[in-house]
Length: 201
Image (cartoon, rainbow, N blue to C red; front, top):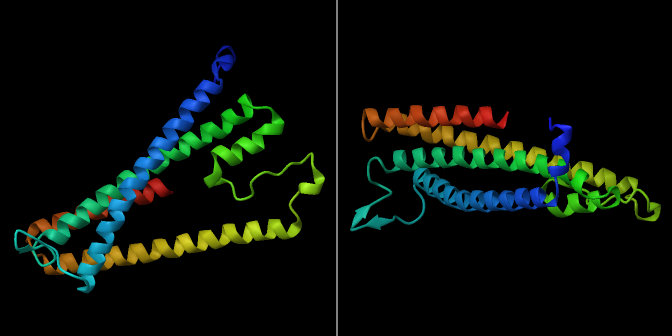
């Protein structure tokens, strides 16, 4: 989609810019993910009523009305933000992969993809011009097994997270510790979940 006269402008400096921006977004996403995971663990402990209580100025956080609703809404908002960041990373990595083929010669492109797109590469460098270094059929089968295994694990983890959130939402709906506001939070979380589903698919 780039005009021919603009092709020479696509050079190493643009690639470096995209890689730096991609790394910055990934680092930001990782930080937010750690906070969101901590909220999820606290919500899980609250739901099953396990773990130590946390108090601020002598007021129990775990047993205070409205705290689960606030944390769940925050958790859903952060999950939506993380998904948006991951979408941006995917777009940037697609552009990086395209630019690698334009900036580097064919003999280096596979090496650079392994270096700059390591998360998206299962098999690293396949030197087609060095037959003695080619992966064997066993390596390819292991690659495929690993890819399918990770898909199954991710799908199972997604089902567990969805089940936990559904149980927590149902519990908050039933208890309604802050009245109608609890139901508003449930609707908000459901809307965030819908947008998350749309972003993923």
